[in-house]
Length: 236
Image 1 (cartoon, helix red, strand yellow):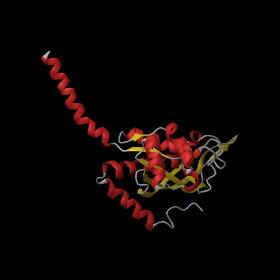
Image 2 (cartoon, helix red, strand yellow):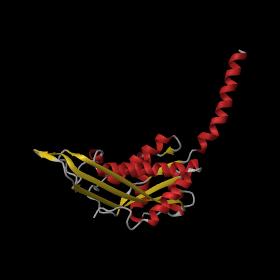
Image 3 (cartoon, rainbow, N blue to C red):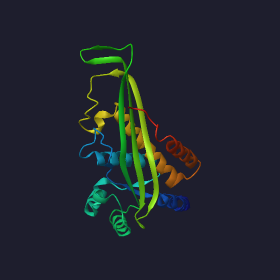
């Protein structure tokens, strides 16, 4: 009996220790992404596809409690966030109360560029080309994190994703970008999207949870982005 009591006491102590850590995890929701870039692969539903990708990455870090899309989407649609892209104090509080989200992540794809360049040494047979082709893709996302309690911007950052590939082309249509995002995962566009999603996740984990030396790395990236904005990537 004493042993059982001892075990129960130990478990209770562990729960007391773990509870603050669990409570300390930010509760975060990811809104439907918007697009002002004119990217050819953007179509109806992609904004929520990107939001889901970011949500999954955030959940996988173990640093956040992520509000499910099924709970978040109806509330955001009711508040008509897509129309304004902004969150007022009253709106933010209502979103927080109804979904439990302390923070709302909002992203806008502001730039997308792609380049396919030729090269020597390749050959083609029945529409399948091997070698001789290099592809690049670049994507920029304006990221905002809103405190739902105050309606104020907690964090703002421009995030970039880049991808390069070459040497193999299976004749896929990479100019029109039709179908679900998953169909592009092995293309430069898909890789640039994935790179941007991972960068978004790393940034949020750093600025909202870790708040350590990683901040210096992201600040350095931002300074580099700003200083080289005009020639950050050459795809013309």
